[in-house]
Length: 142
Image (cartoon, rainbow, N blue to C red; front, side, top):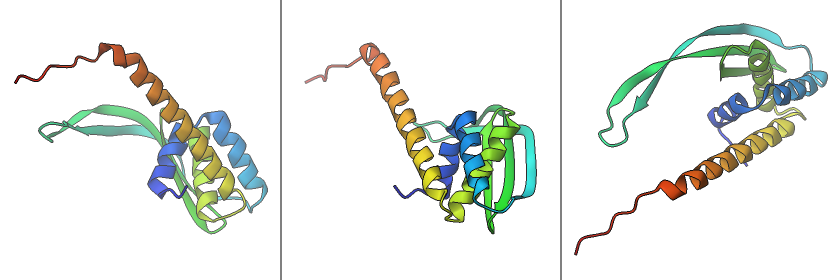
């Protein structure tokens, strides 16, 4: 499946630390050492949402996030994850750079994204199935 870079970044942000570190190690084994452009930084990010009916935007709150940026094989990789896991965000940035540079590991990055997408879809389906008995259906008036 062809994904945009934003979709890939979102899926890498949802991958587990173990998945990311293992894949990043494989990516690094087949390339030159990466250049660290922005070391892992922890900070707060404002979360804004759009109210679905009126379309009004409002600030939901601040969340703790970590970001990093690397260059690997001439391609830049960037990642941001919720929380303060510096190792996982650096590994995600390496995976993003490997996917951008179209190395042999790019297929493994795509495969990880496929697994994470399937896992998230299954979790969403399970959540909707859990909520289904609580749905209230109204009758139409003639």
